[in-house]
Image (cartoon, rainbow, N blue to C red; front, top):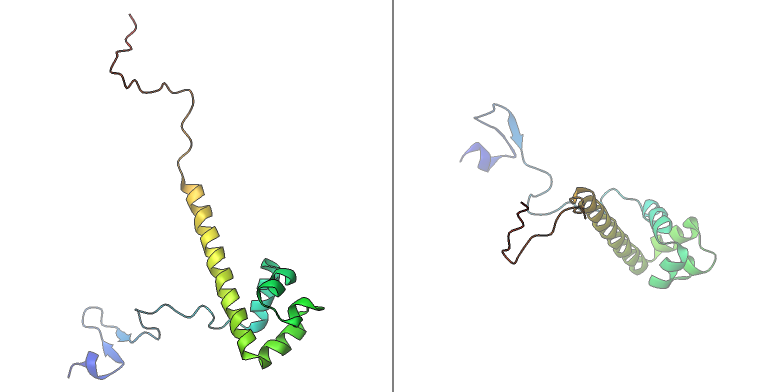
Length: 131
């Protein structure tokens, strides 16, 4: 059995350094919710959507009737179905922000519009020689 097959760590013959297995399989993307607290999710969502929109999309009283972060945290920690919806909406917000960043990046890299001072192409094959 080779060192690569039998253990998590092996000495890479080319570099001479120990190579370990990655903690995240390469075929799977890391969890975007890993390390994100519920309080951070709510704070970012309130800043992005506002309480009114959140209350329209997820129909819970903690978002519609005198909303606050502490009351929402209490409710969501005790109500798994509502927390799942909040996490889904948070992931939607992250995707939306990523799309906006990509769109802004494409606009920055786009070529400048052509000048109107340029002469149009002569498609008819006529010569435009001036004597």
